[in-house]
Image 1 (cartoon, rainbow, N blue to C red):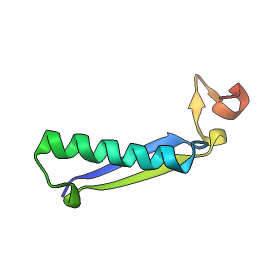
Image 2 (spheres, helix red, strand yellow; image 1 turned 180 degrees about the horizontal axis):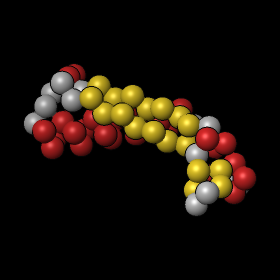
Image 3 (cartoon, rainbow, N blue to C red; image 1 turned 135 degrees about the vertical axis):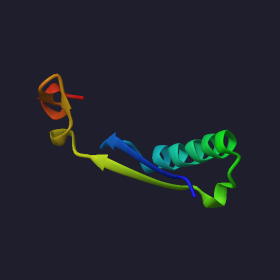
Length: 63
């Protein structure tokens, strides 16, 4: 059973995350010839204050 863990910066609408889950499931299913029902995906949203870019938080950078 493939298990995919995705970390993204917070702030995307729920429908975008649903689309991501669907698209990644399709890609993994095709790549591994695995049934989509066996694929598990976890999407973790990281607060911008906890996401560093070049030594500065994304929150401070206005991302």
